Length: 138
Image (tube, rainbow, N blue to C red; front, top):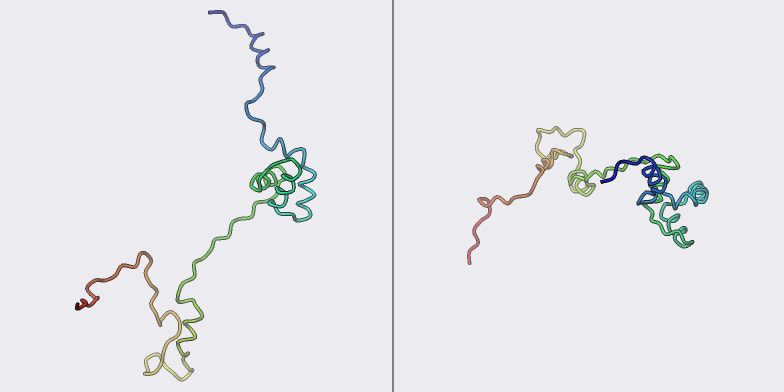
């Protein structure tokens, strides 16, 4: 086995190239074009399609990552969708007549409007209660 030679190691380090190119190296040539298109409020998809048509194949997610990381655009938080509850529907309030000012909740004929009409259903799966189902006669 040969001994350690620092000069040969330095020569190997000078010739070393990383196996993978740095991130966004291809897009750095189109930086000005991307900045100009984003100033014109172009979408990431439109920019990706334009660059792909002009010999720089890329995707909208790469363009978005480039704009966020290199250009410093802020990332908008995602909107959380809120599931609609069945007692919030306008169809329910149309079916139940509203109480007049003279009606008291304890009097006959008074129909409360809102969550008191139907109790909120518990979360989770809807399981049939078998003891409540009447047996069918053949």
